[in-house]
Length: 130
Image (tube, rainbow, N blue to C red; front, side, top):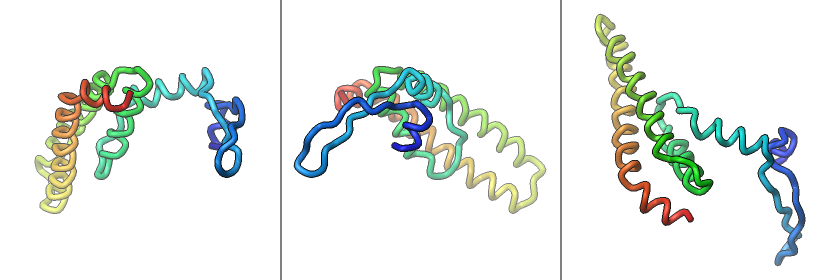
C-alpha cells in the first residue's frame, strides 16, 4: 500500500473504527485509474504459472466495470503469436531446444483453453463478483 501511495495511485480518504486498530480507507486516484486501465488492457507474455495473473485481471476487470472479454481477446492474440514464434523456432532446432519449445507450447495451450473457458463464463462470473 505504501508504494501505491508514493506512486499517487491511491490516496487515504479516512479512518474507520474496527474491532481492532482503526482501519484506514483508501480511494483510487485518477492516476491510479489510468494505471489500472493500462494494466488491464496490456496482455501478459505467455509463461508458465501465468494463470493467477490472468484470473486476477479478469476478476478486477469485471469488478471495476471494464471489459474482461476485450482483455481475454488481447491475451489470446498474444498467446497465439507466441505459439507461432515457438513453432517456427522448433523447425531446425536441436532436440533439447525443440523439447523446451514443446514445454512452452503445452503451457500456452493450457492457458488458451483456460482463456476460452473463462470467456464462456464471463456472464456468470460477473454476477458472482458484483
